[in-house]
Image (cartoon, rainbow, N blue to C red; front, top):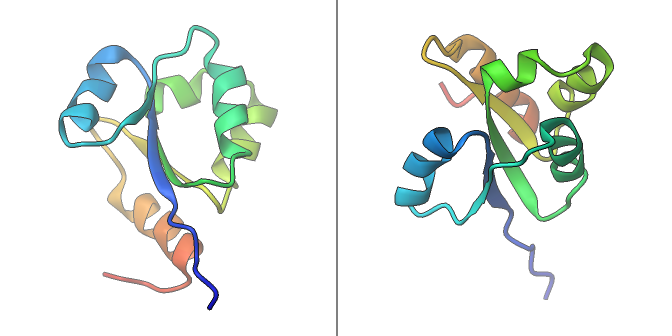
Amino acid sequence: MNQEKKKKIAVIGSQEFTLGFELAGISKTYNPENYADKIQELVKRDDLGILVTEQGDMEELPKRVRGQVESSVEPVVVTLSETAESERMQEKIKKAIGADIT
């Protein structure tokens, strides 16, 4: 019997950003000093299905690194801000699961 390993959700960002996710029960949260290195490390992990990050942090990444992170399919990287682009999030979810759920 082939059992698929469940993927986890991780959140990376400031303590204020990750706190709400922690309260919602997400235990894999990261408040790194070196954001660029940490997000690249997280994108390479095979136990993560979704990686949530702050838009401001993503915008500060070097263009090459941002491109690698944004093109990640597994985990899918979801960038949130106060003015989150729901259309872009839908595209990423569709890319990750292969179906439009909206």
